[in-house]
Length: 325
Ligand SMILES: NC(=O)c1ccc[n+]([C@@H]2O[C@H](COP(=O)([O-])OP(=O)(O)OC[C@H]3O[C@@H](n4cnc5c(N)ncnc54)[C@H](OP(=O)(O)O)[C@@H]3O)[C@@H](O)[C@H]2O)c1
Image 1 (tube, rainbow, N blue to C red):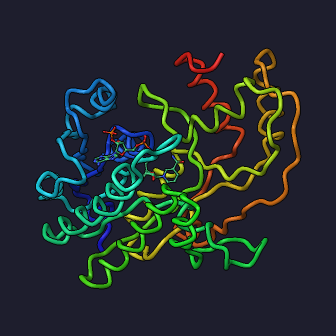
Image 2: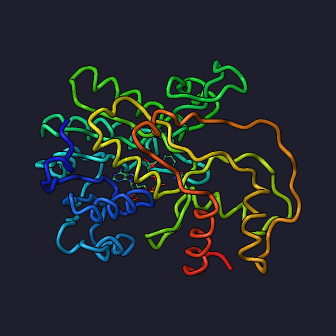
């Protein structure tokens, strides 16, 4: 695949679920390079939760929003038609219990991904970068206990199903289907598997992963588990997606995670910058932590910013939005 940067042309790229947390940062990044005209899909063009997209720099010239539901093949096919690259980001990330896992997460993730890939194949898209997750990596009872995870580890779908871990199952099945489709058709597909994504929000609503993170730093609970957290900055994930698209050598899957950090270290780091905020007071030590080897992604040139920067920028943003005191 010839990189757009080398050709010096403006490439039309589609970003699915453009109004979401990660996708919004990706749209912003693509626009900022000057190398992309972006077609972002949203489910409801009139919904105010997507209004931030058209306020991004250069959006007026190079961002087009189109309506598409990943379960509606026709809308997906129209969205990717004429695009050279596609970033498939849209997938439900639920918080809380699901009343109908199949309809709520499995079908949108799996059928949604297959619809995107089929449409891309028909539209002769050059490369599709699919956002998977470490949820498709770590839930594997056969992986040696304590051993760092690599791209070779896959979550066990039946194990996820047995434990009713529906989101993990949705990401595992969707990523398997993506590679099966690539093997069958020759479509160039690269997947990125981020850990828990945090960072400043561009959109007005709080997504599931930031909600989880806020639970640890809000100070609503006096005592929290002092586990080791595998976080990654949303801006670094957007960088990873772009690298995976532009680097002709990129192939297969890539783990995307910053070095692990304990909850107590997060709180202590934040205390130095925001001493008046109410933090959890007590930590309960918990056993076990996951380590992800990110060597493969780093070989593409990926770097992750210092976690102190992510924490500071996140808290500044959450305070400005009034979701943190
Ligand atoms: N956040 C994390 O910690 C994390 C970690 C690893 C991987 N990921 C992956 O990263 C991607 C983005 O996650 P996020 O955190 O940015 O979540 P998010 O803010 O909740 O965004 C999810 C997006 O998917 C869209 N979507 C869901 N179902 C759809 C459907 N049937 N048709 C069209 N669009 C649909 C949503 O659109 P609506 O606004 O219309 O609902 C929304 O734009 C997902 O693939 C997720 O699995 C996230």
